[in-house]
Image (cartoon, rainbow over all chains, first blue to last red; front, top):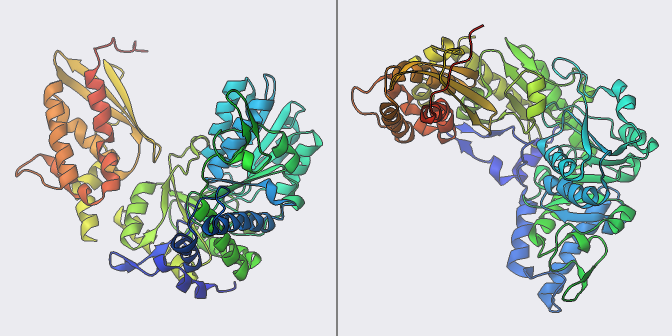
Length: 411
Length: 147
């Protein structure tokens, strides 16, 4: 594994103690820490360029607009979209999915239509579809996960039966935030396309870790957040094919998205402005731009290899602990940079509280994945998730802390 | 470790390992379920009233050591109390959990004083209590018919 330990110095928040211990930050699937380059880009924007975009003709407004639109262009390049107009800035993955559900969904779904999702979807790629299904009379259908620990990932042999001609949209995650499994996005998109269904990929857990190419994946929509990829919170992206975006109705009304307004009628701008009503998160977009530059300077293939090796190392060490149940794939090649697990005797919240006393930041809970948890007979798991700046020594610290916890609770 | 030892006192560990009254109560006249949406834990409390007093109180659910021990200890403390007395006990308990200050010679519930150093865990300690108070507000219902 290539060491990326030198990047630790780029992240001011990593340089602190929690209690008496140095911070071991293993909650990256929830949000990543931010490098100095991103923090500085945001500060610089507010100190020098701050102004509203697309409105003014003065110098600062032009600088703000240039910065905001440069971020859009950079995001298009980052995922190899054909056209910057295919990049809509949102608040994050959740808002991106909601945009498609409320705009495309409300305009296109009818009773008898099916929305296909999977049992491993985060609530953000589940609840919006439930809501729009209820509103339109469409029905929701799930691709099941297979194996008592979901170790086989999606039950792909069932897919042909589920992908019937009445499926209008197939929405699925690239990497599960709970299982860590990497889904075969290109294959799933190809199979959906064959029956004429659109595809939406939730890339929240993959975008900061590996190269993504929307044209190679051949997806119709792709959603991601900035904050899991070194960027700020409050900014995210919806990628959509230009032809789809041009045909969809706006989902929110306001300034910035209109071509002309009369008392009783409005005409709208084309994408992306059509979907960005109101003053956008300019500093967020500029921070996201800096984050994309930061990741590419390191190299995304390198980051993917690094994070996945740490997860493999963690999985192997965790498997030695008594009474542990590890979720997700057994083969390392099918796992992204996270591992979630449960102990028979110790609840995830007790694990997280204990680990925190050793400076180890973990996540415990249902990971916004309640239906999957119920299927697996769990109320919660503990998750360790890895990123650029994590080291093998930090996994040792995790395991050491877990040993202490198990000893304390007497298992 | 000292804050942790305060949090996980032996009485809490004991009630977590061997929860008292963790079972469904078929004779229950009042039932309520509490949810902790952040962690997905649930706790159902069953109460059988004996005139105006709690004749029997049990719970079901899974959760962390704090929530399980709290539910278990609660059932031992509330049995025989009126609804009003139960609410008074809860208010005293909530105060201990929030401030860490237990009056001298308080009941075993004082073991939860350590929770105050872990604000994120306060709702674990109070989950069963909220369900119990909810149940105590209900009118009595006929118990489920016995099989």
